[in-house]
Length: 148
Image 1 (cartoon, one colour):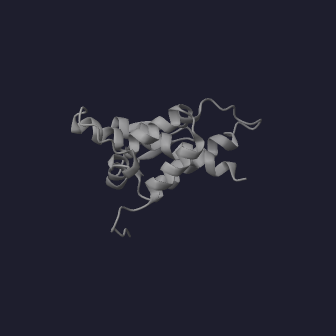
Image 2 (cartoon, helix red, strand yellow; image 1 turned 180 degrees about the vertical axis):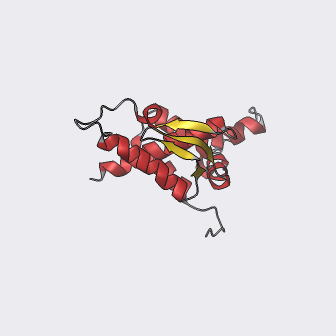
Image 3 (tube, helix red, strand yellow; image 1 turned 120 degrees about the vertical axis):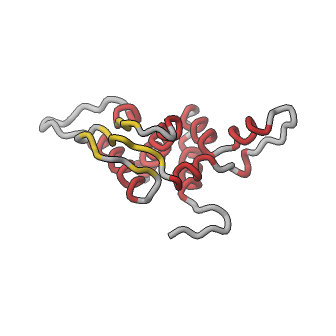
């Protein structure tokens, strides 16, 4: 079983959602805020879990989902912000999540159907399989679009 992949999905979703909440402001994205406090090893190096979370954020930056100015040691990405790609992916609607409740204003229906809202709910419910499915959906390009 590839538990590091499940951790990757959680870390990627949590990091991108933190940036989405701050968008369009740039923020310091601290690893500890995403996974909690991890004790360094006997040599003072970050734990494997801490390094994996930082690796996930760096991968997201390399793949164009976020930008940052620099890292703060192993602790954070400084001046991090969602890229256009990251923002558009998180704000798009999840087809099966659309609610056609006419009592709700259209803006509420749109927000509740967004990938960001669905991911936030899955993380809050600690529903690992749903987090994985939604995070994979985040990495898919939109219908009829090809990205370079």
